[in-house]
Every structure is written in structure tokens, then in C-alpha cells.
Length: 148
Image (cartoon, rainbow, N blue to C red; front, side, top):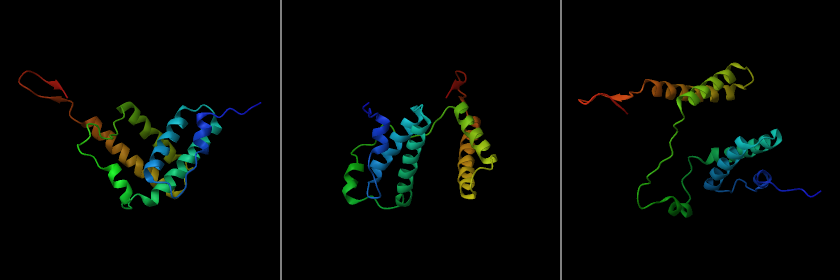
């Protein structure tokens, strides 16, 4: 029986290394996490998670490096983009993220370094969540209140 190559298999076997540029590594991270979220098989999820972790590990030490001269043109534009990356989950989803991170923090299953990172992430998310909940929702006008 012939082995059918799936898109997950293609992702898992796609080569990259410490010489892979940060744009390609970032694209890989997006592909891995998207496939991981959609995958049903636990082995596929673990393999994709491993590839994601490796890509992130390769990116981490280079994040503050200058952009290589040959990539400057690729990252230069003539007009400002109409859409910039933003993080705007719905408040119920954001609350779930905070709750799951809180449960993970309390699980006792993390190393001290993991605990610190998760607590930092939890701090940032809870602060963002709180700010979102307390943000003004209406603008008082002479015609009556308007939803922002």
C-alpha cells in the first residue's frame, strides 16, 4: 500500500535550519500552528508542535539582530499599509486564555523557567483583558449615547 503524502507530512518534512531567514521561519510558524489547530491525529499535532518549537527556537536568538541588507527592500514599502497586525480576541476567548494559563500555572507541571514565562504571559493577557473590559463603550453626544 502506497503512502499518501498529506499536507501535514509535507509540513513536517519541510527542511529548515539555522541559516533559514526569519521571514521563512515566521511563515513556517504560521503554517505549523494552523495545521496543528486543524489536525485530529495526536501524533500529527505533536510533530507539528515540535516543528513549531524548533522554528521558534531558531528565531529567538535572532530577534534583535539587524535585518540583513538583502532583505531590506522586501520589508520596505512606498505607502503605509491599510491593515497592521493586531491582537483582538473576543473577550470570552480572552477570558478562556487567561483561565487556561491560570490552570496551567497552578498545575505544578512547569519548570521554574516555564512558570516564569507563563506568569509573564498571564500578566500581559490579564492586563489586556482587564483594559478591554473597562474600556469606554459609548460616546456621550447631544443626540444621545453612541456605541463606539
